[in-house]
Length: 393
Image (tube, rainbow, N blue to C red):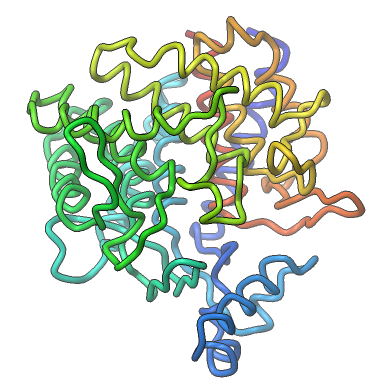
């Protein structure tokens, strides 16, 4: 066993315990509009909502409690904890890990978005004003739903329980039939973030959906799922730049976010899942170029995650967690030896409180030492558990 692994186990157990002690209830990055005070003042206009969200998100301290924002469960966060617990169970075989994962899956079922959707789906627990859309609290979206599906897919793989797979099959109907259709040709398909009127093509959306459909097809062959996954993947792969990167949106000017850290990792990991599930190496060269760009342009020599390819700060814990996940993939452990461990060491030394929580961001001048359970702890729990699993198999 590597000398690194025991300290990762300690941090994983502490972080899982601290998060459970909070009942997984949290404030989160974009939930300012859950403040009755801010909603009353700024909630009536698009730019007012953007202003309130951005000010609270960027403030050096967590103002949410003072502003009356209640803590709540984040479906994506719970899904990440499920994935972490199942990876831990795969290594140690502790029944308590599996039991807690299944308990969280039951909570996820109670958090499904309400409405006349074609299938089960999930969204965020706060109103969300983006540049391109406004989504009321609970509006389902593709990214949250895809991560929840990943949790149910892994639970089915571990337990063999049919009803976990049924949840994914139901959500696939939402993903295929309710999301905005932004591009559709015989070769390519691009889906919108939400079932709303929108035009912004967000890169990770289509590939995350493709990964779910491909895995569902792998378990229960369905040609239409495989074909759709291929079209979604082709759209994303064909948007890759010559040096191996992906902009956050197509076209790039549709968002102030350009080539950022964790969305790049999302795309790479989902692309790998698609290829594995469909048994193809069609995009292996694209994957390898993307990983090379990710390693060289989105991480510093000390393992700290860059915010974007052209912007160093803030160093965000989510970026560190995503880097650990990507560079802990078996082929990347071989091709980029020590990189995942270096990022892990940076996170544990610079961003970890031994009571069991990770800090949010390190800026050039100070560190935001508050903790969002999903953004910080859930992502790092999954990163730690996956890293241990892949290092020991």
